[in-house]
Image 1 (cartoon, rainbow, N blue to C red):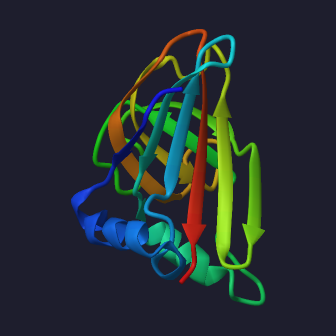
Image 2 (spheres, rainbow, N blue to C red):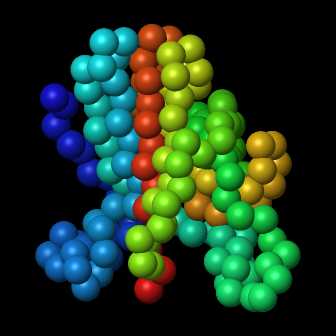
Image 3 (cartoon, one colour):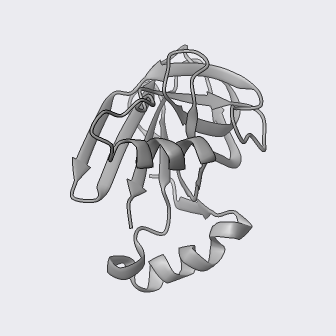
Length: 163
């Protein structure tokens, strides 16, 4: 199995360190975990990175408290080859419906999967969206290149902790 590599952005570094030292108090030291496997299921790469909750994400979370929410909920996850998105991926490669979305207390976990032949590229960004195309991007992250070959599969697990 590949060694876990942890990448964090500068904004998340202090919280990342606190999460490593005391995860019960400060949450997981990462929010997005990507697992790349080959055609027979061997793990090629595990990457854990911090993410950014966008303004649309903050607004969407707050909206869900209302008796009748008016903003869309996350339904899709996308990957791309750009960097630095704030409202959309810079270079979106592929977007899929969430494989699963669960909640345990104040922790929401969303999973997206890409089968062989999908999102074949040198991926460097990902986000969670409220629609199959367009929509609002709730979370965003960039990461070191994930080279997804045509026979590889990719699963991204995204964890949002409300605190």
